[in-house]
Length: 168
Image 1 (cartoon, rainbow, N blue to C red):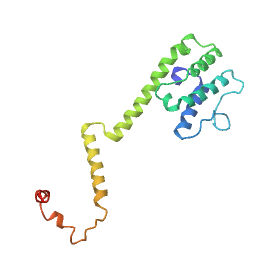
Image 2: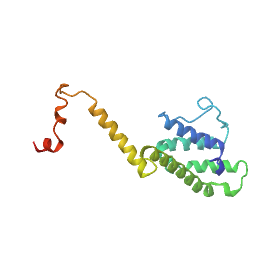
Image 3: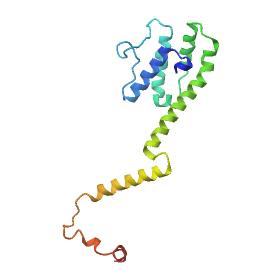
Image 4: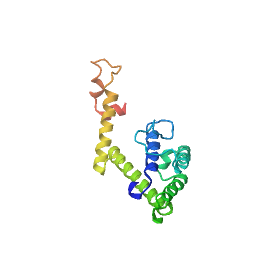
């Protein structure tokens, strides 16, 4: 987000919201006491808009933020920030917002790709191998528990071949 030239306070507030969501914490607007290193001066004109954006995003959902559903107050706050240091007009939200949403969606897509590779494998062979390992573990878990058969009777089901057992 820094490469998009978003305001540092805005990045800090967004990261605090995502962190709170990831930790299953109630949304609480970050301040100097609950967020170490936060550099939002209390007199900043964008502070009130950032608070509104934070609480509005908390209502929409921070998971929705990661799918590109941003409250428009984020861009209002960004534009107010752009007015402060007299930045170029190309840095206002009408130019930055589409790039930010694209950046967020690409980051979310990469996380899902890594997750899917971990759980399902990157290739068909890896997927088959992972499925086989899961099936093996499941079979071992079910058959490692004791059955109602005595030790001497336990070998009886395997004394006959499968076709004979199925015919009975």
